Length: 286
Image (cartoon, rainbow, N blue to C red; front, side, top):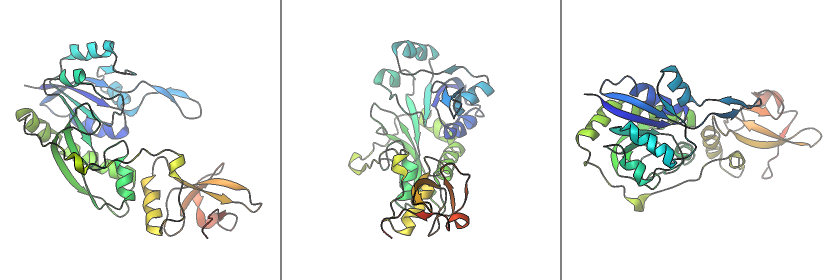
């Protein structure tokens, strides 16, 4: 018997799980739910996100709601999934009616050792805070973000050269490698859950382009971690002054006691060593 499963996701990292799910003979993916296509890049061409592209590639039923409207909920009810899996989907959040539609509720995969590092950007913050170990958490969704009871946690290490990209790839690859056993164990024992200790919760805000600015008061090690944490998005940045003292923004892709790979606005990426005689860091603390 194959269990029917609906999949919610919207990022490149969601696809790591979805591709693995599609290989599992114990599960049949009945629908993919992801964000609507949106304009991207300078041309603002309407573009499908990676999950939608995966659904097209595998010719899977695709739903792209802007919100969980009564019309969408009715469509979801008609699917009658045994279980739903949510990976990096984002808002809107699930209400109780949505949660109760699948027989075995909705499972979320979150790349942190919950209840620590709740929120939308757990990877960057764990790198910035110099965590050396983490875990990817399978938990049963309730109506509060990252709040539901834990199914299992799979530990992994955070390397000294970890970027957000490598962190998330590692976390979701770890989840994918155990996906079949975790899902089947949960379905066979759906009540064997561990409530989160909400007194231990930590939450950190989502990053934006403005909050990716380097603070030169930080120690070198923290600057290095921050630069890695902002890679590949939103990319750490600072300001430099040219020979006419004109301030310019500069992206910093890597850092080792000083910027390494950088990009001045309007220019191509290059090594800081190649251009540092023409620009100087606008560092008020020097």
